[in-house]
Image 1: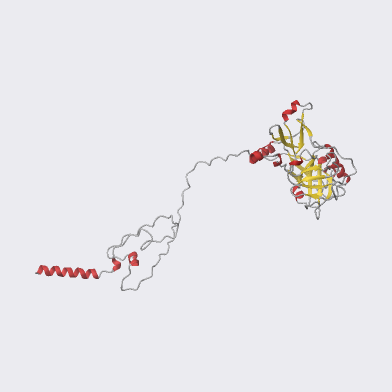
Image 2 (image 1 turned 30 degrees about the vertical axis):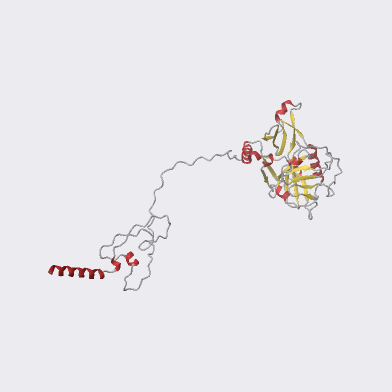
Length: 379
């Protein structure tokens, strides 16, 4: 009987103890992710998972459990988000161990050293002052001796001064040189024979940039040309082969009528490559500087407001006080040869002699100081 009463009293005591235990005193749950009791990460999602909090001792209150299940006799407290703690100061990092060197970049051709330069021939350099700016032209007597002589003759006579660019076709040519400023106008000089081709020999300074089957192409004193294969020189009676000027951009040609022997005073400049003119018009020279000016001339047949040649002079005829120094890259030098190789490698199968440009340096005329006499002038 006493034993039964004792057991009953113990059961009642245990029940009362259970009812009086607060809900937030439940055993803590380790945080394993987002949600109740988890620390929310505001950084990189790839950051390491937060370290679990230390276990709570018996009878202590767990903040996570308290936030998850508030006491029934208290109003529900808003969830508090912990403020992110400042990151610990970065510790100095030891320099990384030496790594293997990066692989060597393959260069098709070495960067050429400084180009070699030589002065442009003053007697075969034309200074063309236009209404848009100055154009400098290297004449080519090797390709068309009579046409070059005619251009210099008319320039020295002043015939070209003031003439209009009466026919300018976009992407093709800029035409001038007719005294009446119309097609068909001529000077009083006799017409010229065609000089569409010339004979190229090994004794003529030139640089071969291409050797297609049965032919060759390159630069002759800076002028682009094409020719028959140089292998034929040994079998030719004069040890030469037929060659012709290539009408790349900036080439100066002698105009003519329908008849091949009707060239006289008309000249034109190619604004872009026009290879269909090869072997049909005499090549007189090539622009050294000022192709952008020729490309900027007013377009039309005739233009509504045509540009004009203000004055045309041979460089050798200019007073020293007005004469610029014109230097042209030596196309036979090793530096330019490297430039040819690099251009050919970049263009691949599409490489053409028209891809080659000849760099030019132009120095303004030296102004003599007061009290001195310029070379070639009398005191």
